[in-house]
Length: 594
Image (cartoon, rainbow, N blue to C red; front, side, top):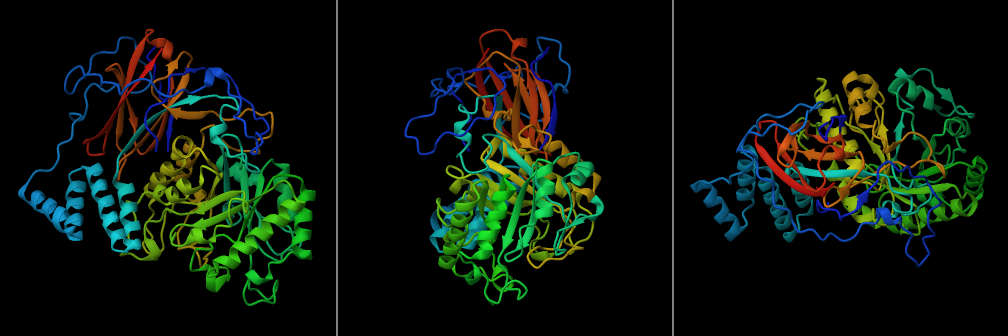
């Protein structure tokens, strides 16, 4: 039996990990997190200890011939076997008098027009990594001239252009051995990511139920489960500051093991506040204390996302909490302090929107002023609902990166709102392929590239029907398109996504470590992350230059791996990435032993 069997598809550190004996069959359970104030190192299971790599960069395994492969040494069944590659696994740089002229203009004068033309020429030739390098160099020049917005655009373009190919190995460590995946924050799972959503405005789910004060209606976890086949690990709703704790909704979720998230928004409404500005109403008063008391009585984990998207210009006229970073920090810290004094099972989320990131970090209340850091971002075909601002080729992960890189080392990250549109108002033709490609990128990347994203919420709403001032008009409903829903189901079937509150003593999800330099003795799973610019492509995988397997690019692919089908000793896993036009993009060769 050949080592790879295709399982399912869905949707930066070096591609090496230290020599270690992997025992993936050992189940691990959640344990109380280590005291973060402890000065001693965590106790680590010796069989899962990762030591610094000692193996030098492996020499790529030569191919059997330039474009064809030898027969596999064992009978192969499962995924398709590639008899020939689409093209030689090499890339050639562009050569012409025009290219030389443009390079000279960049070297001497740093001409933006020369950058732009050279980026376009390389992109059209399928040399995406070179185009990405040029875009990043252009971003550096923009920053040198103080053009910050242009630099952000150029960096985002580079993130969309670059090809990515990485391979990971599934491991099942103990909770202590997975200490590098957690910050021990309130309500943070050791490993895995809560699968959440906003579902209150999805009319296809059936009749809603009302809050006790009849101010708002909701949909229930079981309705989402029936429609999507996924039980929500968390659901969120919006609540104006001044309204009572949403008891009917919260207790319905608790009964189903679903963690409530409350997007708690200060308001200028005279119904709840006499203030024309929202932040001054936030005080250590009877309302805040009673709300905290209700949370303590609830006695179940709750996420409180207070005054999110404060960096968005739309929150100034509509809500009144944009524009005064000092006052915002003061009020956020006050809410965080009071809630934790009274309700120990609360986790506060400080949440920005991207774009525009701008001065968002000026509003950060400090590491001791919040529990989690959150981000709202969307994948839309057109920016600002304008036909002349297409965004089809943009990579939504470029919006996650700045927040993740800045905070993930010390805070769990929550994607509090994400969705990919499958229909826009400005161009009403259905575009399910757009939504499918973007959601595969985001959800597929989380287990492999963003392990400290511990909550992801799909904003399941049609803003063409339910228009809001802070959302561009798009249809984000999963239940509106069967293909989009099926793609979301595929990519969220990974065990990484938690569909109920993970309690102490329960089995924790496996983690994925970069493949390379391990000793592998038991059956496990390999995760392949592959991204091309534009459309999907193909990844070719082989061991010791034989038994080549095809897998789809455009997100994550997972393959069961049977090391006992190989002889004992050292081996090389090779992965080759081609784009949709069958042009070679990238290769990695990774050593391991059995």
